[in-house]
Amino acid sequence: MTGAEVDGKASFSVWKPPSAGDAAAGKYIAVIGNTGSGKSTVVAKLRRDVGAIRPAVGIDERSTHHPFLDRLFHDPGRYSYELQLNFMIQRVLLVKRWLDAGFTVVMERSHLDDRIFIEHLKAQGLADVSEANAYLQVWSALASRMPLPDAVIALQVPVAVSVQRITRAEQTGARPCEYSSERQKVEWVTSWAEFYSARIAELSADPRMARRLMLADENTAYAEICSFVMRLAGPPQMQADQVMSRSD
Image 1 (tube, rainbow, N blue to C red):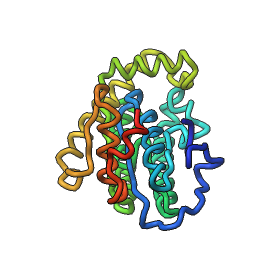
Image 2 (image 1 turned 60 degrees about the horizontal axis):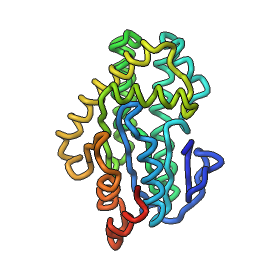
Image 3 (image 1 turned 90 degrees about the vertical axis):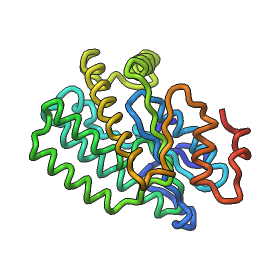
Image 4 (image 1 turned 180 degrees about the vertical axis):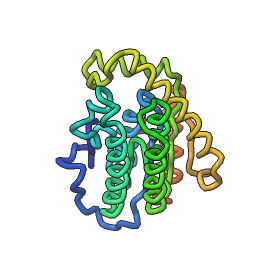
């Protein structure tokens, strides 16, 4: 799946949702985790299964990629801060707009993730304290204007697995070769993994997330993930076992 997918077909524009009817019926499902953890695969499958019972859109991260994304990796000193601000605002706008149109949103990453990336930039020397504080003020303001996700799937896999998957996808053409070097790839994936681990621990300790959060790894069966999401985001009359036959 590339970009947004609605009713099994790629939409012409992720920014122009059609109306699905009842805006109150939409649910917000977030699949979070480090790059190379399998998020886009899970998003595609959940959109398929949730979309079988209610209007749903699957939004993978590539649909929010900026035309200047290559500068994030090849000139991060000049562009990384601005691009991360852009990603944060885009995520909020997309979720709000599709929910308002009456769709359930199955989103790769979420506004809950965005704190991670400023911590990464600060650790890499790409954002100073005042820049990080300004970013976090914007993040806090935006988060207060967003609903909590109805379900969050937090994927955690070892760094070596993430790097291996990224490299294989680059070699097969499934994803572009974005990093400026193999060293940068390993360093940044390692850094993101550390901050994701800390953020997921925070979410796990948040009482608001007690029912909403599922931790998963590379050994977690998709059927478990789908069952968890359906309990929280499926209509009351739909039992999880009714969609298992469509699950991989």
